[in-house]
Image 1 (cartoon, rainbow over the protein chains, first blue to last red):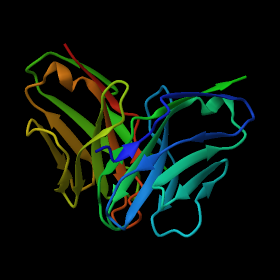
Image 2 (cartoon, helix red, strand yellow; image 1 turned 180 degrees about the vertical axis):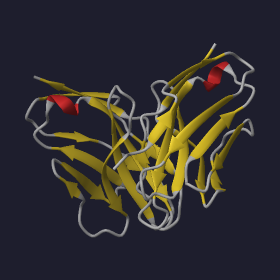
Image 3 (cartoon, rainbow over the protein chains, first blue to last red; image 1 turned 135 degrees about the vertical axis):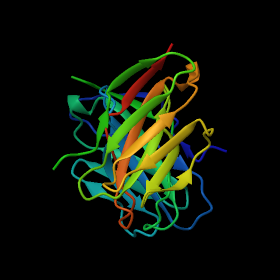
Length: 117
Length: 113
């Protein structure tokens, strides 16, 4: 079974509007972390935001917020006020295990976001 | 503060050859992970090094091996290259004790002909 599922291969959004990128995950580990990364055409994976499974509040980082619904096992990324520079691939990833354990990241297949001027 | 650096940026090899990729972690980080990203897919975990030991390994054959040096830098070696090894190889560094947030380099694009 897929551990991380991103069901939107590609999305368009109008500049200055908000957009939600979907991510669902599957784990039986009570301790896990969820991450979002941005990958421009240059190839570098840029860390955006992190949510721990025990965090009570949804994570926010500037224009990025994570809509964490634990019961539904979803961790959607919300980008507010989209900019042209937001056009890129976006990956959702999960780490299973405690925070101080060096566990691997499992990635989804990604969503390509295109921002229209 | 230098981020994660990888070398070389591009590499072309032929089937059967061997290749070594290099990674220097972000300043202060002590853990290095390697990922393979085929075209159009998400990255796949290869292995992770901490304190010069391989701590975890993904589903990759023994042709893939690695090393971590005392200064925390790392190498990824691939022997007997196959056409299917063509991919972007990403190195990520992190601090073992803090939330395992991994910061990535720009990658090495390997083409096997």
